[in-house]
Image 1 (cartoon, helix red, strand yellow):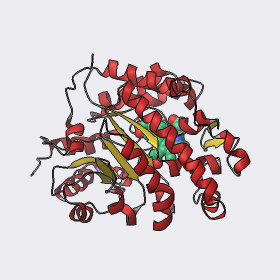
Image 2 (cartoon, rainbow, N blue to C red):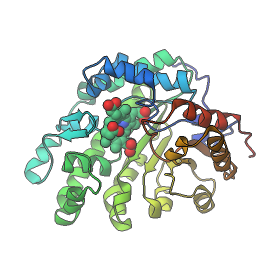
Image 3 (cartoon, rainbow, N blue to C red):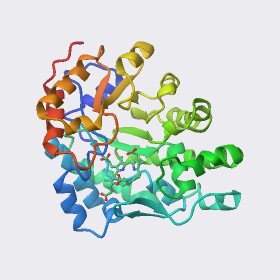
Amino acid sequence: METILKNDLILRAARGENIERYPVWLMRQAGRILPEYRAVRSSLSGFKELVETPKYAAEVTIQPVDILGVDAAIIFSDILVVPEAMGLEYQMIEQKGPWFEKTIKSEADLHLAEVDFDIEDRLGYVLEAIKLTNKELNGRVPLIGFAGAPWTIFCYMVEGKGSKTFSESRKMLYTNPTLSHQLLDRITNVTIKYLKAQIKAGAHMLQLFDSWAGILGTDQYREFSLKYIQKIADAINEVPLTIFSKGAINSLEEIALSKCNTIGLDWNMDIAEFRSKIGETRTIQGNLDPCALYSTHTQIESLTNNLLDSFTSKRHIVNLGHGVYPDVDPDKVKTFINTVKQYNIKY
Ligand code: CP3
């Protein structure tokens, strides 16, 4: 039987329904900012053991709910579990980030991006973690599931590691658009199946992270990223969907035409301006600069109040403009969260 949610603010905000106050959570809230996370993490062999062991993944997913008081949990996992399930194993190297031994560089490599496999079989550990988290949360807050947007996953599958420019990936768009589309199509198909499996396991809402959207020009973004995001948005109707396309500042209105509920904005984007363009058609998520959390408690309060004062609608989910940085003081995060919770909504 499905547990009744005691706090469903974020789901109501996503659907454009009535809310008593703005809901708040942080991208990357389950992670290194919390000493409690670092304690669990250091007792294990590495990041992947944490991701792949539902008991531990559930524990660190719930930590920010208990410690920070956020209005949603986000399942502890990574966007890179998808390319791995498709056939490209990754390692998370300490202080450096992800590294893939094999990459996709030509048609001959395409067999390394499998589509027809059983999600339960290869990603069952994420689905188990979702079930266990909901059991332990017992309806306190909704649980957010997620995946990387196809373009961002493509970047890692082609490049094999992080990059400032992802020039290998962008090169392929020019030199082999056919292969690029084939790979993006495969990632999209797997992502839809994976997100549907997360819903079935109990995810109450979903977010697509297009972290590398901002490195594409507007036309290429439309052809190689947004097209596939739209395909995913068309396929997901069961729960609210958020699209966070970091840096896609010139494509926001087009993104807002996708069949999603919420658009995430990064801190370079202007909430009031975007609201005036899209009206009340979508919920907006964001967008305090993650670096604002390095300022004083008083500054954080006033910056947060200024952000909320700029809203002219109920259709908001408050968040940072990108993931919280690992060395931010959790007490500063609490100040941000408590300021949002104490704010009197005007609409
Ligand atoms: O938001 C959450 O709290 C849930 C967990 C989550 C992680 N990664 C855990 C993680 C989520 C939603 C992600 C998404 C993710 N992963 C993105 C998209 C969001 C974004 O930040 O733009 C991307 C691009 C990745 C890929 C990734 N994972 C990189 C490049 C790295 C290394 C850099 C870094 O942040 O350390 C990771 C590692 C990672 N994923 C960590 C965590 C907590 C740190 C690893 C550790 O604890 O040692």
